[in-house]
Amino acid sequence: MPLMTQAAPLPHTAPGDERLCVIVNSGSGVQEAERIARLRAALERHFAPGSWTIAAGGAERIVSQTRVALAEGFGTVVACGGDGTVAAVADTLWSEGAAGTTRLGVIPAGTFNFFARGLGIPEEIEAAAAVLAGGFARPVQIGTVNGRVFLNNASIGLYPRILREREAIYDRWGRSRIAAHWSVLRTVLTMRGGMDLEIADATGRRAAHTPLAFVMNSPYQLEFLGIKGAERLRGGELALLIAPETSLMAILRGALRLGARRAERHVDYAIRFAPAFSITPAKRRLLTARDGERDTMIAPLDYRAEPGALCVIGPEAVARDDAPDAASPRGGAMLGGALA
Image (cartoon, rainbow, N blue to C red; front, side, top):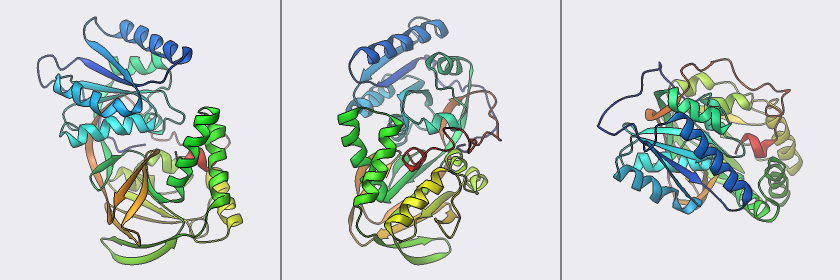
């Protein structure tokens, strides 16, 4: 689970700050119209008239809509979408200097919803709206890379290429977990070579050659993969996972073992923990990914943990022993889902 502290009542900082603006990452069609109708009905049941508004649009409008909500003084900005949508809203709150004062609400509507699940937020619209109405605001740790926010993970190498393939498959066949898993297999089958990296942290510098590097901020996602060390993320650190440079079959085998929560340290991956990492690849411009969204950044890539930086509404109580069961469909998901 993301780093959380003791529950506290929702902060009251200014007149009118109880209003909610719900940012919806919406598409088109009958199903999308039905989803927004369910959202509207849930908000009407849990909030007074005039205390909330919905701003729906495509992914390209999330940032501008969040900025408008901040300019209009909404005390809570709610992200309705998947992990990428939530991260985009959180990134805007951070860049606008509002991450610690404006509350972030979450109504999960994506494929995997790792951030919401880590906070114990239900994946059903009605139940998530109930949490918004009766939950508590808590400080939650974020990660940043060159000043940009990630909530679950940020990566370089193979995974951004997987995302590019996934988007093409989604465009053709629609969004699904099966499509996400297929994008992993297609990308791994066509990969060529790895990256030369220089990695620096408080202990020094070291060289690495790898097809994939992941920096993880989510304790829940680390537990999802069956990797030890979630308590260190809860304690204000990040985890850096490095895949070994090996054969195609070994990479596929390691991906399956990771998705099945049976991966072995020093065999399928190497891991380090630190509050900050600096990664310098051989190429100055590099395709990166943050919470499932691709971006091009300029090296070096500076990753930092920012404990308690985000104020997020969640349930009053969150269980600490809720790591996914390896036998469950979610616990046994392949790499395409596990690292979404």
